[in-house]
Image (cartoon, rainbow, N blue to C red):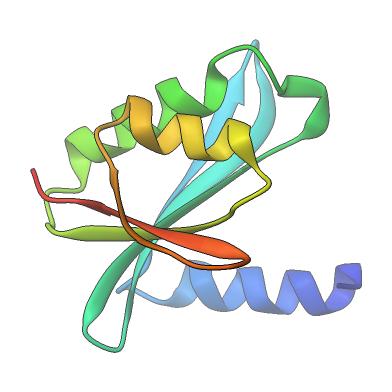
Length: 111
């Protein structure tokens, strides 16, 4: 996705009062983001961490903190099956596999 398109999408998220969105800050630098949004009938959660911050437990910590503020349950997250690190982040935060597809799996958090 090109930067301009991404920024328009991101600005829309920031203006949308139904989207819960937080920056992930590590050592005074923005390392990524975590957000939750309603999609059809499901409340979703997602996150992104810059590559230079991978492998430090930042995503797991950020998602765990975010889940303390976002009380909506159940929450759902989609993750590519080959992305073992992201799958592990969800599992550490209490998500379980709801549906394992060919390319991606759906995880669910009930409590």
